[in-house]
Image 1 (cartoon, helix red, strand yellow):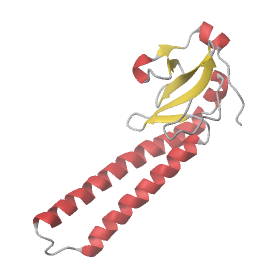
Image 2: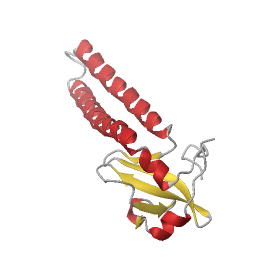
Image 3: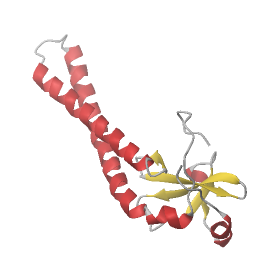
Image 4: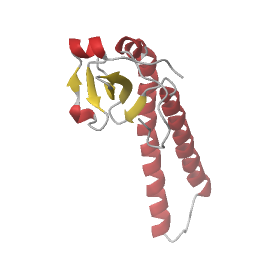
Length: 154
């Protein structure tokens, strides 16, 4: 499977292995979800300020304030990028930062599938096909537990 940028995934997980990472990943994921919300708010504030400036024809621009807003937004974007990269270094995929959703690639019945975990869930309880996404989640049952397999990190 290839990531959106064309980069091949380097790791496939066993369920137990993925679950052993959840405590560490939860801390990073909660921070990333918060950073995304703060970034979106800062971006919205900057957009509103820019719109006001445009409506006033550029008159009475508080340049310092505008630059501070841009700096805040850019710093939040950078932090968000760092957090997503930190999560992905574990080998999992960040899918949705609005709800805190990550996937763990694994092999099942000769094909790659994704074990799916959402912030707040007690453990990894669902999986889905690569092309199905969250709505295609199926419960992890005994058959899945017995026959899925992972691969070590390259």
